[in-house]
Length: 240
Ligand SMILES: [Zn+2]
Image (tube, rainbow, N blue to C red; front, side, top):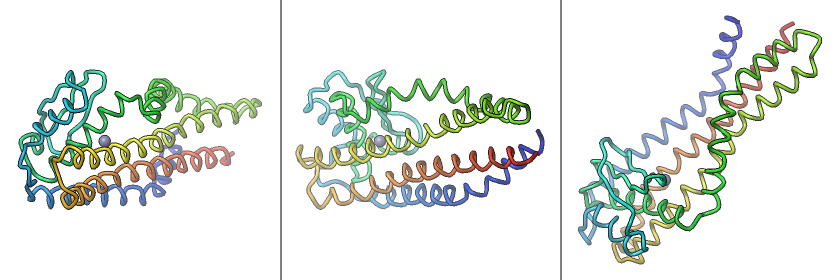
């Protein structure tokens, strides 16, 4: 068993491109955010005021806005119907702060309009919670069965285990259009409500595009970790 862990970690080498892409994306997010966080919007309204205006304007008067700790921790929680804006965003009236806020408001409207990718992702969450608990037991039992007479049963357990792991890729794949769509909505809303002009939304686009790269990095990482799992299973199977 010790050797199998060793092999699994050695196979971790395949993860390196994903890790590099992740670090690059994260630094791009911070640098672009900081760059446009020095530029005030012409309108001058703070991010939380813009959020309130956009929500009320779109008929979401019941959605609450709160300030939370941290940097770039902004999010919308559909179960509590609360938009949380980070300390670096809430009171700011910069291109970055207002842009990130509009993106979160984009998520509010996605949920309200029952945007199809959101429905798919929501349906996937409970399946993934259960299956992630089953994955390793299935693979370990599968590998043990491979060493007995029950090779076919072992094969099936391994395939199911790998199939479950592949759900992570589906989850990352469905997250990507959700994020891009929220950013597109953000730009449109900023222009439609007159909070920004076209020149200002170009900055917003750069900030939100940088953020989208982190989701691309997550997708690449999920594909590579599936590859690692497949390599691991085949290495273990070929050992005897
Ligand atoms: Zn988002």
